[in-house]
Amino acid sequence: MSSNPTLKRIDSIDVLRGIVMVIMALDHVRDFVHDQAYTGDPLNVLTTTPVLYFTRWITHLCAPTFVFLSGLSIYLQSIRKSKAELSSFLFKRGIWLIFVELVLISLAITFNPFYNLIVLQVIWAIGISMILLSFLSRLPYKVVLAIGLVIVLGHNVLDFWEAEPGFKAGFWWDLFHHGLFAVYPIVGNHYLAIMYPFVPWTGLMILGYCFGVFFTAKFTAAQRQKILTRIGLCLLGFFVVLRAINVYGDPHPWTTQANGFATFLSFMNVNKYPPSLAYMSVMIGIAILALAFLENIKNQVTNVFRVFGRTAFFYYILHFYLAHSITAVLFFYRGHSLDDAMKALQKIPFFFQIPGEGYSLEIVYLIWILLIAGLYPLCKWYDSYKTAHKEKWWLSYL
Image (cartoon, rainbow, N blue to C red; front, side, top):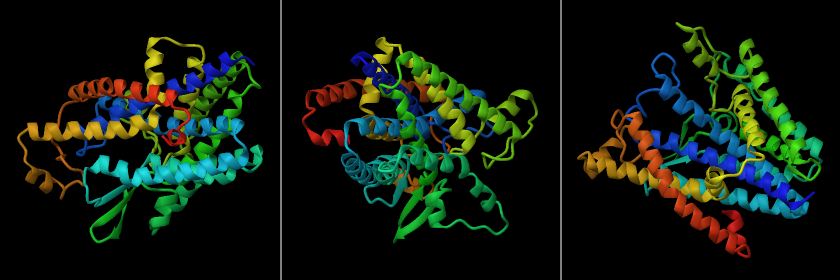
């Protein structure tokens, strides 16, 4: 196979990763500055608006796509590395990602230098999944695929156990399966919040890893595009059937609402924390169709997304610090003092945020656009630096 298809394949992955990174920033900006960020659920069909609902819903694409593409990229690395080299790299990178989550990301989210709250989010889930994949990658491909399928297809069985009267989730249950901002004391007034239980996310990364086979020289670009389209459509069809049956695949069944549109919103409101089978089916179905669509597209717009995709980890860390810094500036602009910020910590554990106070969704979108515009030259510089310094081994961890 020629080198061009290989480059196109990598480009399509980077472009899609860049797209979901940009969308992700919208959700985090909304969390920081929207006046309803802590007063209501944007996916509650009884209280939300269509614009707010879809502003939140579209960002559901981000985490599963990012995890899935991480697995896919690992498979592509396995072509260039021996099993021992790949295993060692994944183990060390996994530990590094968990460290970054605990130290850098938690600080960016809370702006609390005393680390009274440490949050386990998607980077933690990717890190622990990489550590597990460092061992699983030594197994035969079919065995790894079977493990991924069992986890993704079967983890919602645990929902029935949770529904039993008297069931109480503990730390390990929340860490493995449930999560959803489960908070546990560490020592003194320091707490750990679990947002991303790792088992279902590990299953998704494993499937992404196995999906990487379609991006090898065994398949032409045309063959791959056709296969991806079929798989994506099948996943969406599977989601519709699974959701219509309304028995398995999501802990929260949809319900008939006052009108057809509200019922549709209930139908599409699938569980992210933890990621249900229905949630992963629709989101990864869309992501795979996007990969097929992006296969042969290259223009100025995709070039911008490609820069973000090639610097995703750098972008991820930086966007949190910039978004929270903007939040702090706006906090003081509204006339608040540092004492107000300290008092607000009694309500939510994030500096410079007060529940019910903030800006309209239109302002949220404006700040999001400005944030992305500010991030682009920084990511462009970092991408150029990485390209010019491939000899620096530590760049592979960023």
